[in-house]
Image 1 (tube, one colour):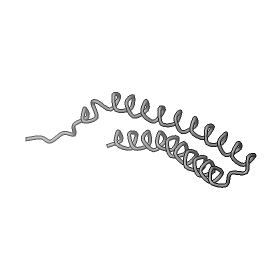
Image 2 (cartoon, rainbow, N blue to C red; image 1 turned 90 degrees about the vertical axis):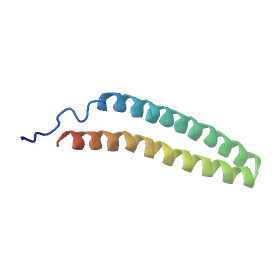
Image 3 (spheres, rainbow, N blue to C red; image 1 turned 180 degrees about the horizontal axis):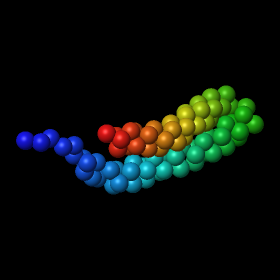
Image 4 (cartoon, rainbow, N blue to C red; image 1 turned 135 degrees about the vertical axis):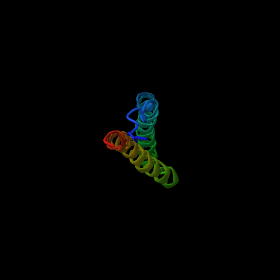
Length: 88
C-alpha cells in the first residue's frame, strides 16, 4: 500500500480568496468612509467648542483608521497563509 500526498487538498481555495477578498474590501471601504465622517464631526465639533463631540470624533477617526489598517493587513496575511499552505 503506497501513501501519496493529496495535491488537490486545497481545491476550493480560489473561492475562499474571492469571498475573503470581497469581505475585506467592504470592510476597508466602510472604514475609510467612517474616517471621513468622523474627521468631519471632529472638525465641526472643535470649531463650535463642543468637547464631548470632539472626543467622539477623535476616537472615531482613530478606531476607523485602525480598522482600515487591519483590513489592509488582513489581505496580505491571508495571501501569505494561502501561499504557505500551498507549499506542502
